[in-house]
Image 1 (tube, rainbow, N blue to C red):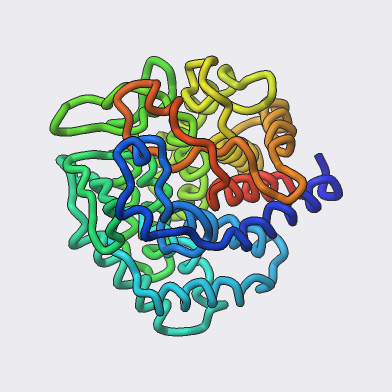
Image 2 (cartoon, rainbow, N blue to C red):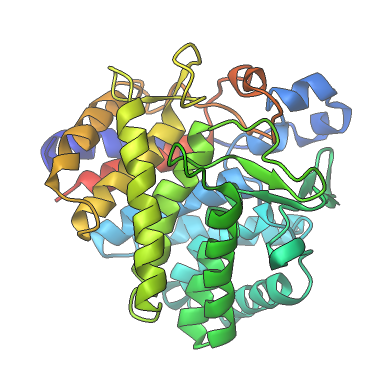
Length: 370
């Protein structure tokens, strides 16, 4: 697909992302466990809240702006940040770190020292105050349901999501501020998460690891969980390539290639991937498929993957474009997904338009642009 075909779709998706609005956040105070299990958490909907779905959303918009090489969406970013500062930021945790990823990449354009101060304080908090698991992994602490000022500790748990939500930001801050300790910590987190989540038999990644249980929970290979690595690890390597030890770089790149080989063999005829990657009876899921496609396209661009992967990427792009409605809504996106102990947990997650679905689709299509 060429730019002429892709750009109209991109702008429909972008316009929908920027106009997703808010949600009835108070409804979360009475959310049932069944609603939570299905991902029906109001704060995840829309574009207004300071949390991971919206943070991923901002990153997609940043990527589109970077493609154009100007500041055409800068007012949107400023207004979004300022509106959240007026409302008051939620608790510090893994997921609420995500909006800082777009912010750190926009610091020069934003031009306000207070934003740099916010990023510096968040990076130092990750280093000093975020709970750590055994082997010093970043514990996947999240916002409490129904209380944006509270936290859910997820004691002793590592999640694949953390690599995108937090490690990318810390790595970028380390390089920007010449903080070698932050750069080294980001590298450590990448290696710790590979150590506990990568499955040598399949080449895929588990959603999480529990130190208290000493297992990978249900042992499920979740599509979007894998995709956080497929795309996120290349964003990490893109920033770290000049400073990362060559042996570590090759180790991480080889892990990525092994995962992509496994993913290529699991691609559905539509070009998408199933939400439980190894279960063809589970629904095809667009956000994870988009991030996988973005990772493959970026891998080809930077030379980690050869041209034999182009067919897989193009097939995925066609499938993703087929999921974009006339009004720009990205269809087939699974809602926020907590850790699951069996495949049914992932298969029963609700389908709902989400900021990250819009964003990851934007990112995939931007990676395909010339």
